[in-house]
Image (cartoon, rainbow, N blue to C red; front, side, top):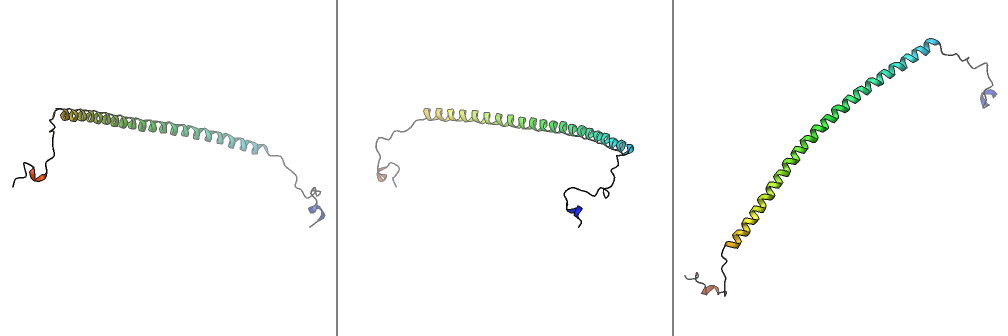
Length: 117
């Protein structure tokens, strides 16, 4: 290792290659690549927007189907609640109109009228 290799500042100027400026054709090539990249990005953006639109349409169709299903279930629930109210009303009316026998005293089993054998 040499003394110049140990120093933080490079003193060996002769060893360093001479910097060359980019050639004009390289600048043109890089500009062409940049323009191509911009066109590619614009094309990808159009594809992304198209996919987003299709995705939004799919989501709207799914939401519509779910809405129809929910409306159908709500109608079924309303119908079942109405039937339950009618059944409750009918049971209450039947209970109110049926005679309930009143037992005045409880008989032992051997004295019951149906216990004759």
